Every structure is written in structure tokens, then in C-alpha cells.
Image (cartoon, rainbow, N blue to C red):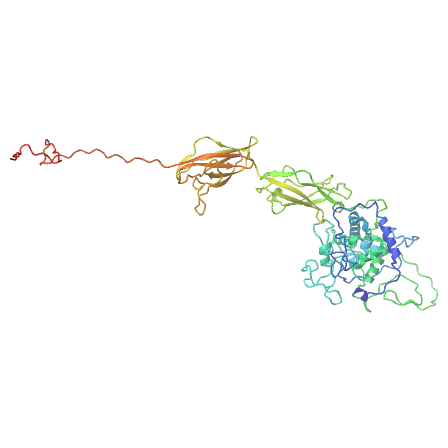
Length: 621
């Protein structure tokens, strides 16, 4: 798409031999030898999809980082920023002053150099030069709109490409619900390196350590671009891989040539300018036409047969009157004159977060009993690719949602910094009530580096349980037992906080709950409770209260067990209430005799009273 709108470029500006030589020379000029790659592969997937040989994995927009969005087509001046006498094929000589086009805003340049150092440490075989990132940054956003960024590297306002609605551009429906580009209908390229949201979702980075992956931050975007360009095992010192990498960013041959031109130009030398003062490009691939302004070019001596182009005016009539060529004006020196790269042999300063290659878990066993502080702290050691400790690395420790263990103040996540030995030590961890193993995850914010630490919370134990006192435990049916005190010990010492299970059984040989014995009251449904969980107090003792005899007399056993093997069996006796014999009636006094009865008259054998002595009975004949 972009090629048909693009203007014709100067031929021969970026021959394959020159560009390949530039990359090779840049790769050789970056200070000390490259470190071996760390254990986490920052370049992502190492395979390129078979259907598109120019697209790294995860590329969006039908196969490019930008969705083939419009780009700036301005070219560097014909007079390169080489120092006098330097051969044009030696692109490694830095300069501190030069044309305005060679100036790169300070923060933007720092981001490119940091990205180069980071990728070079993790993937040295890629040979990524920061000048390639600068060439892409120039073409995509004019170096973040001339360096209009804040102190953290974030653009002062979002940089957005046009909506990719299929009207002169690719058609890409919204993939991020407007989170990055503010457009909920179509995607747009975002930020100084112009990633579309679907590509950023895969390749986004947090290179400045602020905890966010922001495509509008030049540090984040530059590192993501470097990783994207190196994907698939590319070696950018090889011309074919270099071309494939650039075409994966925007599938246009004119785009390829434009980026390569700036890449070669910056490779010959550049200088820093204050943020916000970088030269802004004018021409864009989607705004080309007869009314667009012409960019002034350096004086040239075109041949009479030269064809006019948008970047070169028509030649003047032949045989002009001889004139003395004007003395070229010296370029204005920028306020800052920092060399673009340190002398060979000077180490490149890489932030600790980018130098760390691996987190080594500590070897101490992380164990604790419930509701106690772990004896050992969770630690990891940050090391670089050569195994050397890295100080000043931010490390985040996170607890899983399944555990009730906590860091101080009830925190489930803490972030600490590694010390001079590279050791990052989490604050004291306290176990909760749950006895179970869990995993602590350590990570470097903004990086894919992680380490796992195994932790275990064990139950408190008692290897002996004994009743305090020896009074018989007896109650009548339905009556209450006296309070019982039991003491737990572990290795002879009092054992506080031990969970003890109490079960009423039918005999000392049974562990099954009784169906008729005493109980700990009744539940909400009115059923007797014959199993109860208790816990020893700070003195290792527990009190058993509320034990009630059942309705069936007999002998039962209260079985107590604790983790660690502690056991006690207490006999519970249920008796019938005592029975009282009926009371004997009180003796009574005989009533006084009636007038018809004689007190002296004995009763007859038949029970009737005998006749009065005064009464005579005539004997029968």
C-alpha cells in the first residue's frame, strides 16, 4: 500500500554491501564482548511462521508490527555527517556536532542505546545496532516528535496513526477495546515505534521498570522493537536477515529503503540534542501529492538528463554564467554535544533490571507450623548471564490465593531490591491456620524472569496427652459432668495451639462414635454431638466443658487424639438415678368401744363379740 503512494528515492543510497558492512562494523564497536544469552529468551518464539517469512511470531495487522501504517518518507541530506577525510564505507566514527538531521533527542537516544545493550546481553547473536532503532524511530514518529517526552520517557501526548479502516490502509478491527489507541472500532498504530495493539500485546515490554508496558514510552517501545526485529534467530549483520527484519515492521520496499538510508546515515555519526528540539519530518506516505511542500535539499550539480522528482528540483539551464560557489554555512551547534557511543573498551551501562538473566531460588527450607512465623525468609539471587550477582534489581514476591500465610501488614505481595550479593530477601512470612504446602513466586517486574520457592505449613503436634486430676467422671442419666482439663506435650515440653479431637466411644477398644453415650450438647437439628475439635491454649492445656450424660446408663470412653501421636482415654460413667422404697404407714390407736360392746368380752372365734355376762342363754335341751 505504502509503495504506491511513496515517492521515488535516490538510487544507490543503501547498497547491500554498504549496509551489511555498516551493521558488521557497528556490531564490532560496542565495547566489551557480548554476554551469552540468559535462560529466558527475550526474543520470544524462535520460529517464523511458514506462511510469511518476513513476520516475527505474534506480529499483527496481517503480518507486520505497524499494520503497514503510514510513515515519514523524508530522507537525510545528501551531505553525510562524516568528518572530513573519513571514507564513506567506515560508518563507525562518532561525531559530536553536525547537521540538524543527525541530531537525536537525548532521552530518545538513551532509550535506543539501552535497548541495544539489553538485547545484546540476552541475544548477542542478533547483532542489533541502536542505529537501526533510530532509523525506524525516525521514519515512524520523527524520533517521538522531536523528543517530546517527559523525564520517564513517555510522550507528552499519545502518538497515534490513522484508523486502519480499510480506506487506503489495511482493515484491522479493534483488538484492544481502545485500551492503547482509544479507538473501539478499528486499531491504530501507537507510540514512537508505532506498534498496533495486537502486536504490542505480544511484544510489549517494561524497559524503564515502572511496572507498565506502555507503547507511548520510548524505553518500552524501543526494547520491544529490538526484540521484535531479532525474532526468529535473525542475525542483523547479514543483509538478508536485516531486510527481513525491517520488512516485518512494514511490508513496503520503499519503507525498507527509507529505513536503511537513515540507518546508514546514523551509522556514519550523530549527536544529541535537547528533548523537544529534534528536527520534525514533513513528508508522509499517505500525504503525497502535488501540493505537499518540498523538503530543501543540499546543493547538488545534477546532470542535464536528470529527471525532476519531488525531492530534487529541475536542473537549471545549461552553460550558466560562471559564478563563485557560495561558501557553505557552518551548521549551528546544538546546546549539548554528547558523543553517540563510548570509546571502544568502555563498558556500556546497563540498568540492573536489564542485566539480570536469572533468579536463583534460595536453598533454605521454608517451613512453619500453623499461626507462627517462618524461621527462614524467602530469598532469591539475581545473577547475570555469566552467573555474577546483580545488585539493585527489583524483585517481587507473590503469595498464591490459596494460602492464608501473609507478609507483614497482611500483604500478599512485596517488592524488595537485591543487595550487593545479588540477594533479594522477602520480609518475614507468617503462617495462617491452614496447614498445606504452597508456592511463592518471585519475578522481576517488566521481565519474564521468574523463580518458584516451595513453602510448607505444618500442623502443631503433641506426642502426649494426659488428664490433670484423677477424680472419677460420673454422672446420672441426663446429668452434667464436671469440667475436665487435659495437658498436651511435645518432646516433654508443653504444646500450645495443638488441635485435639474428642470422640465419645462405647469402649476403650473402639474409635467409633457412640450412639447412646454422653454428648457435647445438641446441634441445631436436635441431634447429640459426640465428636468435638478442641485446641490447647498458650499453656498447652485444654478444658472440656459441657459434657452431658446420655439416657442410657453404662460405661463409655472419651477418646482424645492429637497430631503427633498424643492420645488419652477417659472413662465416663452414666448411672441410673437412685431408687427410694415407699414409706411405712404410721401406727394408729384403736377407737373407743361402743355402748353395745363390752371391753372385757373376748371376741368369739367367728369374730363376733361374745355375749354380755349379764345375758344368759338357756341351754338347749
